[in-house]
Image (tube, rainbow, N blue to C red; front, side, top):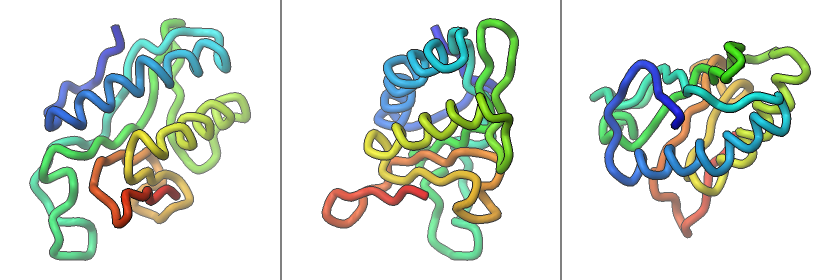
Length: 136
């Protein structure tokens, strides 16, 4: 099984989407790209009642509908950190994870999207107009 650290609260659809994505998508990518199993997802933020940065609108985190991932821990003990300039082999894995997340999640943000997301992936299920996605 794949752990999440520290433990967190998410709403049921987000918890299910995150668990399915980690097991069905990220785990095989870790094995193929990095040669080790995914042991844990290290989250930076999940359920927290707050507005979006710079606005009065509540963040998807306030509804338990978002997860911020700071890093991934592998079975060999290595840690793959989300950031603006990861080592080349880590960058390939992180880029693949980010691209694959766009679809299962409606919003995917990370390094390069804006300063607030420079050190983590933000994944959420906020409904978008016309059923689309917002991925940067």
